[in-house]
Length: 287
Length: 280
Image (cartoon, rainbow over all chains, first blue to last red):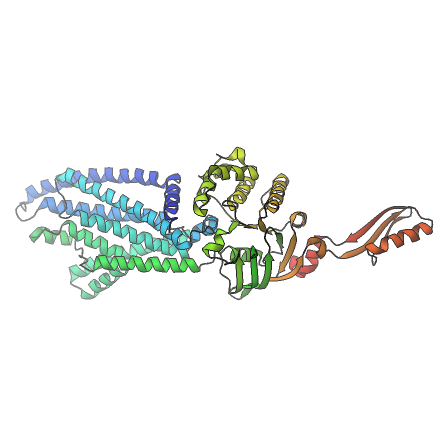
């Protein structure tokens, strides 16, 4: 395991030299710029609407707008984090082996588990820093645009980061079995499946359908990045109540389910299982 | 003293196909062994098992006394894959520095400079891999395999992308490795190259060893040719010991003798005879 820092450095250098970070920074800056523009406009529109409709007393427009906007930003942040996680890990084993990049490294006395751990650590650190950074920036922009700050900040930031780390782990596991393109497609489909499960849950809540809610809950736990995202989403407006809370539930980023106390230990156990499976599969794989 | 590489009954099955079907092979300390065989004979599989990239289905392989694939075994070998690539953004010096860190080599800049000189890449020390020709990358691959001074080198088609000058450089390098007592298993299709540098040759076909020995021992007598004023006369059943008697007889018969050649099969002929239909 002493070679882990060398592998982490190698992985980070690879991303730097391939200009992954540069592209991500440019696109993120564009996203944040658009978000700032949209948030400013949305707060102004809602303020005018509130004054005209006379709902000002019962409905906290600032919270409704801020939570909805930040919910949208969290979705975008998770998506960007997922893209980064997938592109940093999709070709680590089979993809690199097919290109002949892996063999010279694997025959060195570093061990396959060390190699996998190093690549995972690099991806996890990069994704976590990125997701927390973008979430912080969007929260700051929301405050600048409308004076609204989420009820909880650290928890959703950490949960979004953990969600990206889970996606990186799944992508790394997939890279042991699948070629780079197939793995990328598979992980994005899993990501999509998780989001669809979340939406099903919202529909189930609105229709009071226990079956839909159960399906959604099961899918969220099977793909815990979705449960983490939902938990973070519910945390940003956890202290809202009354009509504001009801209005948030009806919105596109409302109705989020809190994960409960089991979410963190489940995520840790999930990552451990995915890690062990990846290490076992890689150590038995012919290259 | 343990052999640099020892395989006993080595087998590898991919689905229903036997890539290796019980191979026994030994590479002694400082010995240069050439591995020959047609495509699909199992050469690359054998080399990959030795360096731990592929797990055997049966038998055993040891590198310097350690089970192939273990950390101890990998510490004792250098490997050049048939198909390999280094990160294009690294220069030659950075590639070697990365492998020094992974191999825990303490050779530092001096080792890197020596290895680059050995493969004729001193001038390209700071050239990015992306800007190197395939031949240069192959020579860099050989330098990479030598990082940490391993006692065993496994070279899988090391000259496949080299021009004649590059091949000569590699031949010189192999001679130098022999001088340094580094054991080498050289997997190549180039019989002339194997014949020129290897102490022993092992020929594989259908996953089995079909011939093995020193190149000169593998050659079979093919008669004697004598140039006379009447033309070249061939005595296919004659051996080297028969040559003086044959010359004397021709001279007695009034013929002038200008030259005598003892014929033997080439390594190519031995190879073709050993692998049979597989060669085609």
